[in-house]
Image (cartoon, rainbow, N blue to C red; front, side, top):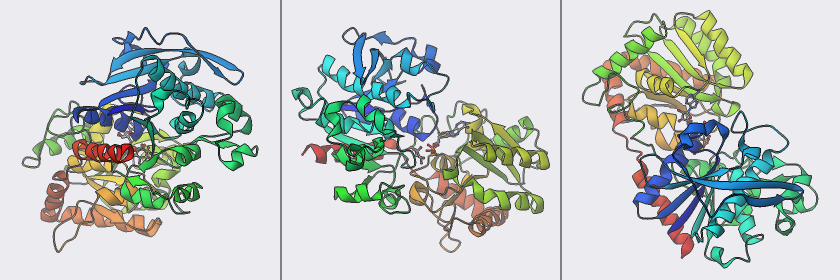
Amino acid sequence: MRICFVASEVAPFAKTGGLADVAGVLPKHLHALGHDVRVFMPLYSSIGSAAANANKVDAVQGVPLHLGPHFYRFSIIESRLPDSSVPLYFVHCPEAYDRPSIYTQGPDEHLRFLVLQRAVLETCQRLAFAPDIVHCNDWHTGLIPVMLKSLYAWDRLFSGARSVMSIHNIGYQGVFPPHTVFDVGGEVRHLLSPFTVAGGSINWLREGVRNAHRVTTVSPTYAQEICTPLGGHGLDADLLARGDGVVGILNGVDYREWNPATDRYLKHHFSPEDLSGKAATKRGLLDWLNLTAADTAPLIGLVSRLTVQKGFDLLFDTLPEILATRDVSFVALGSGEPHYESFFTALQRRFRDRVVFHRGYHDELSHLIEAASDMFLMPSMYEPCGLNQMYSLKYGTIPIVRRTGGLADSVQMWDPTTRQGTGIVFNDFDIHGMRWAIHTALDLYKDHDAWTQMIRNAMAQDFSWEKQARQYVGMYEALRA
Ligand code: ADP
Ligand code: GLC
């Protein structure tokens, strides 16, 4: 199959969260299964020299784009996904992408991602690449399905193309004011949802849901949750109206990147057979961060975007109390909403020798925290898939998670009778659940045999992309039939 895969972020070139991890690795596995997959993303100025050994694509230089009253020109620069021969097409349009960050709150945000979507289809035309599947990811790509049905419907190149809309997070929908509809293109307008046609704002993800041939999301449980009013963020009715459901395929882990036996950031590697490297990594991190904890005291880690989705509100009342009463250290890495940042900053000030908060984005530190910690905290309010809990499992770092979305699908509650289970899972999104979960983990940690067994169970889990990519291929094939 010829597959056109489009995302606003692709690791290692541009990343704010898990979408980048997925977009950077799933296409490689599709390729390994014998498919001709091409990845598209914007050439943000931050990518700079990482795109240095990329080549101009002669057929796609200075292509004009009229978006309502706005005019852009874009070019395509071809690179490869690292360690693969998968073509990566950077959409070069400095006017849109020469910004200090990947996303902006600016008035032209919709234009920036219209450029991406139009550039994808214009490039397919100029390269005579007739995709069987156009795989769209999140709201930044939500209008491609409706564009295929309208603006580009005349072109027989796309007559066999089936569109897939993958929802990585339904909390972000790309909602723009009514006037932006005209930048999308007059031909598109009559196909949009009635509210938009009647002069309302335009919701890109909703248009993706309404017009794609298939809607998928990143875990089976989240697929169910988003079809309910509680989890649908206003799109549940649109999802149900399709009648064909939402396909939930759990994300995989790139074990070339996340593996304690080979991790390039670790001085001391480790495996289920020999955990001494984990202990050494913990000691190293504690020393580096000037934490005074003994080797035997548990260390809780956290790496995350600091947003309401991630459930850190539950920590306000529980974590200070737990730190005050129990022998435990805590290391957090992340940035985001100011009130979470100030909470962690204050916590660090209060528990100076046992808490470190590193504000910002730091690849190396994220690997060290995964490897060194005994437990990993992810109390998400909702979590489409979540990758860090799966990384944690591989590093024998016991996840403490709430039973939601992909967390429910990847972490199994420890059962003292059968001695099965890979983590601590709590059900209710409240401080009682949170408090119970952390105390349960800390108590279990003292039971050396149980804890070691849980680590073994965790490290034996296999979330490799090989299996998950086959599910995508199966879904594509069903669509084509
Ligand atoms: P989300 O996509 O909702 O942020 P995921 O768990 O799917 O959540 O993926 C988050 C990804 O981003 C992981 O690879 C994680 O290690 C990484 N990450 C998040 N915050 C940081 C940070 N501050 N520094 C380094 N990596 C981070
Ligand atoms: C989103 C979700 C996260 C998921 C990631 C990759 O950012 O919040 O749960 O793992 O996308 O699909």
